[in-house]
Image (cartoon, rainbow, N blue to C red; front, side, top):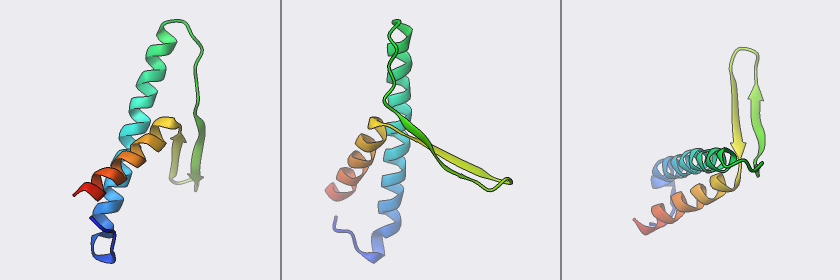
Length: 78
C-alpha cells in the first residue's frame, strides 16, 4: 500500500506495533542469552522524556529496528 495522507494512521499503528514487538522480542533474546552466563547487550537508551508528572522512555536496540522494518514491510504488502 502506498503511503498517503488518508492511510497515515494505519501506517503509524503498524510502525508502533513493529517497534514494540521488536523491542520486547529482543529483550527476551537478551534474557535467554544472559541465562547461559554470557554478558550480552546491544541496546542504546533509554531515550525519552520526563515532565515530572509523566515520563516516557523507549529502549532502542536491533530488535526495534527490525520490528520497525517489519511493520513497514507489512504495511506495504497490504
